[in-house]
Length: 134
Ligand code: CO
Image (cartoon, rainbow, N blue to C red; front, side, top):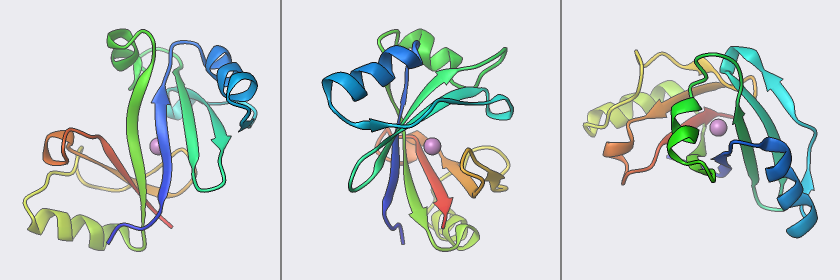
């Protein structure tokens, strides 16, 4: 069911520092940071030949990643995003397998303008998974 790995998201306390590490030390192509107030993050993409890394910094009050960054002050992998063809069909398949979808199960428009769902980490080998419809 799942297709390509769309991105790996890393939540960090200092986006500029994380961008500099990827750009300067790792020699990667890093896009310009963009703030998405409705998602409570400032983000920048690291473009790789086979996938992307999404660097996320909390933005504003009540950012959904603020607690995560507080618990991981050096930064940490936050989620993996897999592509799916049909997000509602994916949700139904997961529910049939007893896996939990976070929130009310209604796909939201994610940071890339596409419908997304997040899955309960305890049902997926301890990993927060984002599904994004292509
Ligand atoms: Co993501």
